View (cartoon, rainbow, N blue to C red):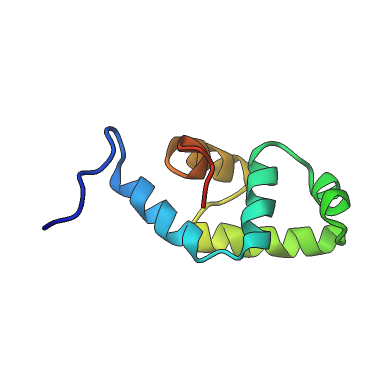
Length: 90
């Protein structure tokens, strides 16, 4: 019995992003979601009770793991191919 058929319209890029998304810690997933939704580093830091520099460090690692260049690229990929495309579940 093979794998179930892919969801209609899902691309190889979607599956790659989902695989890479699974590598992120829950904290980094939350930071990625907040950044993709347009929150500033300062706002994310306040919400999570961490330093702004820590948010920047997490985002640097998130960009590397997900192979995105910046916050705009992160948001576009998450909406087009990633967790926001479905229900946002891990």
